[in-house]
Image 1 (tube, one colour):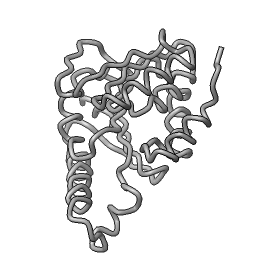
Image 2 (image 1 turned 180 degrees about the horizontal axis):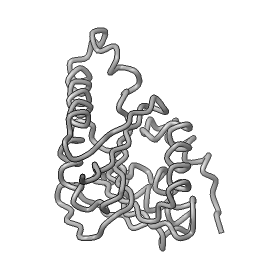
Image 3 (image 1 turned 135 degrees about the vertical axis):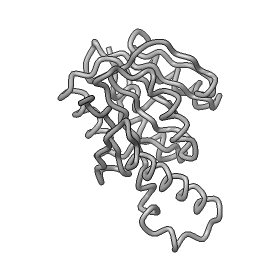
Image 4 (image 1 turned 90 degrees about the horizontal axis):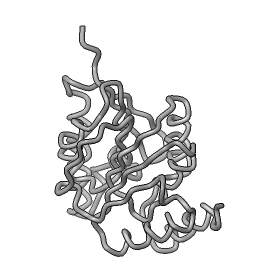
Length: 197
């Protein structure tokens, strides 16, 4: 039985400046899961567990494996997962994603962690994607800054936007995957392996 409301997580994230998916972005993701009958998900970047919980609530048969390196956010995610009674549906690792070796194959890999590492996350975990699986990347518009980078004053933010643009180029030129971009939420990319001719 759900003892807390999802809205409480959204309110906490807003109050504490925790980046979670925007409402239309998470709705797009969960609708995609329903439409494609996604059952096994690997998420890179748990934060407070919001998106993992939303994905697990799609269907009792959904299982989410999620990785979070920040101790405080990991603790909060564990607490939130327990509050929703989803311990059997969500497995969370407290680790740097680059230190995690998985053998399991997933229907969906969701990348929503350090933006500067997206290419490395994609390359590392694509081996864990089922042949007909999907890699979904969030924050490809980065609050609209990807399209207005000349107006960014912060050097760190400019560098981050450059990394996101490099990732978009990586996806566009990828010979193994085809990516479709959606201007939904904070910008979403859906990557699928090209069919072998």
